[in-house]
Image (cartoon, rainbow, N blue to C red; front, top):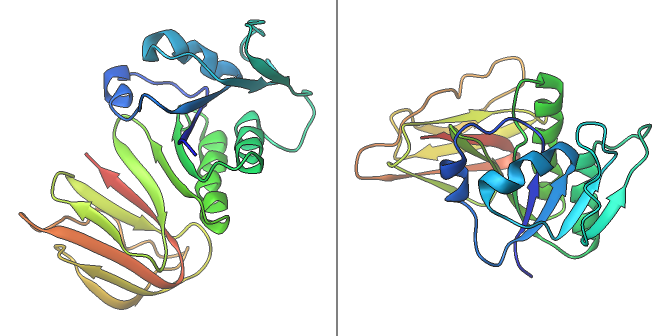
Length: 206
């Protein structure tokens, strides 16, 4: 299936940067306030989901799921669950990180859900690209200024980092000591990261 792009309501200041990640055959799910990004991104949604507390329902001739205001799932999480139930296994999340730290942290957990479901997922903003890394090696090219590894799930052991300024073998990062911040790829190299037990949030900074 095509990749599913889920668009949230968080502020986007560099639309040209974000547009560089979009592909012609993407399937777009737009969540409530994410409707504000349609014109700048020059896209048409395939599905609209929301309780419409931050943007009025546009009543477009497009499939729309109207959610109640009182619910357990945020609009974005409901959109992800819907996409997974429809068979999508490749995701790009945009408009997910912004001024509301609670929403930002909640949205980051969507990357973990995708990882646990065996789905590929990347979250981007104007500054960085984020994904979950586990036993399958992840690569970081020297086009990135920095990369960081953060524990957001409680357990990460057997961490291996190669071709970086700070390499690591059989390392462990726990949630109370996040020492994997601001590493660098060696010039002309491609760094690799993998985790034997658990997983880490990989943030690649441009």
